[in-house]
Image 1 (cartoon, chains in turn green, brown, orange):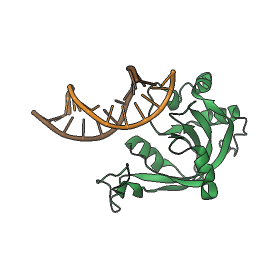
Image 2: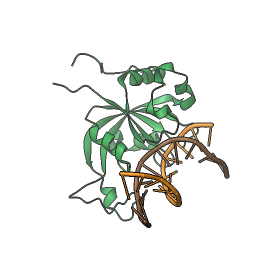
Image 3: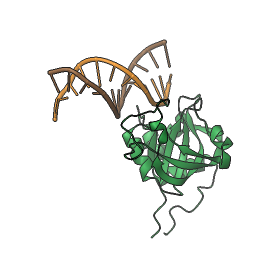
Image 4: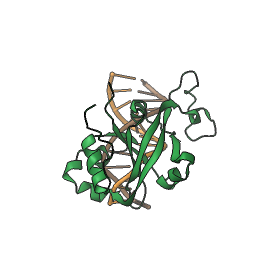
Length: 167
DNA sequence: GCCAACGTTGGC
DNA sequence: GCCAACGTTGGC
């Protein structure tokens, strides 16, 4: 009955919103909003409570994966799309017919060291990651269980809950 | 700062 | 429906 846990990766520019900003939030939890790409939005909508999230710093020096979070609430309307003063304002979005969504995530771990893109590229097992594809821009992307486990190993963490254990 | 990659827009 | 123009992302 239980759905298998899924894994995701979200990007954020640390100058805009870093993992340390997430750490400073009440309950270390935030509503992940502002996504304005349909594929990324569809990934947000596919997220379920307890899914694992890799937190990536883009446009950073160095860019890389800096920690993990967990999905604590499923997709709901991104009200910033209704705010005329928001850069993500979209007049096609209404409360009644929402077009854009966000999810609630809670910080789990901040890695001791950034897993930089060059470091990740050294890993044969991670070659297929969307993140490492040339020109990859998708800001919310799926991660395979295998990649999740490898990345947590590289970060020196126990991959945690036995994600692949019998349901 | 450069620029490749890619999504979106809008004329036709 | 096509596709050129344009804007954005994000590594380097």
